[in-house]
Length: 211
Image (cartoon, rainbow, N blue to C red; front, side):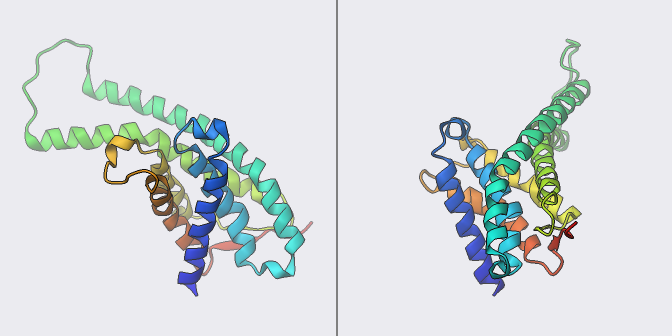
């Protein structure tokens, strides 16, 4: 049954992305439609579905409808947070690399060069990962406003899966093997897989108590 729900969840992700990418503002910013689809589906669609929606179909529809706006707000919060984290990480990176001294340095050895490359990648991607994680946390918080609405249980596993989802913003030149039109759907499925597995876990979903 888990495999069936996993396939259904990925199907919802791709379907939501297919609709959202028609919005011009999202189409002009690669990865934005995928990020919004993941946030909306995983926080506002899947939890009610996994919590027996036939007991409250109207609540499911209401949650899904309000979730579009809530997911957009959460992504905006994640964008601002990610920008701040990324800026701080770049400043720290500049301090380590010391690019403005003009002093001569010997070429680094293979080990040091590898460490510098890894550090550079971490610095460059820290803003995206942090912003994606913050967006997920904000979305879960907004989902809890509606009394009795099932929502993801916040955990380190869920937050980590949110940070992982930032790979939807990977530039084309890093993944040349993924060709259009399959590039973004495949990347979307890979980005959302950890979050789906967390939601399908035994304690992946909780319900806010009414009143």
